[in-house]
Length: 139
Image (cartoon, rainbow, N blue to C red; front, side, top):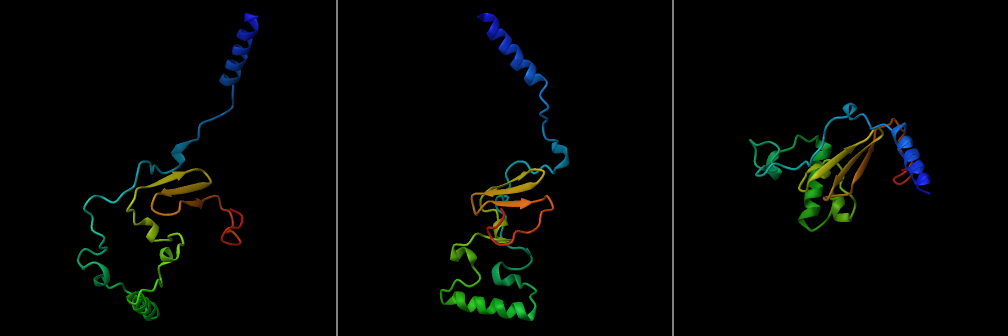
């Protein structure tokens, strides 16, 4: 009876020792390990020589300056123009990268995952696949 147990243990050990499983070669990927967060005390101003907010004076084309001014007018009366988050839509770029909460990148050969508590997690496909046909198609 004891011989069967020993034989089974030997068979499992042999199988595990000769298994073709290999660890992923991480040297092919950038090391983005750890949490990403804004350094303490860092102001939100993009150009430190200018005041924050409208004082940044973004260099907009006349077309986009008109859109910006219309958005400001709508916001002044309580509208949500230009704010997908106010409409319960996930944040897009660049807002998803403001890092008010920690973010993490998980890099695999075919997909990079952007994980955060601030907005919806994202999958970035890096395997040369075509774009999906619609918002939820073929994911």
